[in-house]
Length: 89
Image 1 (cartoon, rainbow, N blue to C red):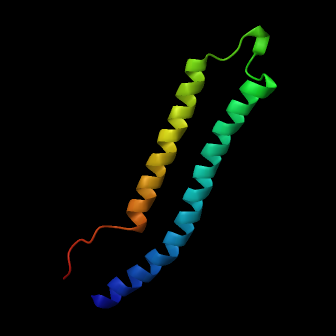
Image 2: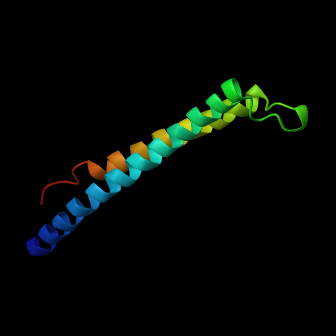
């Protein structure tokens, strides 16, 4: 039984490294999307098709949604990377 636990821990350690970099890239993508939206709306005037501009409410909702997604993604990943002890056998 201990051999199976050891093999599982070794496999999980390798998977944690991959998972960390995937989560980091996804969080960076969410942040870059928010920054691109703000820069595009404020400085470049995007979001004005046919003379209409995106509502500030929509922009705030979009950025808030990305923030919640990023934080929740990092919480789930960190709980996997650093699990609480299930008890020592």
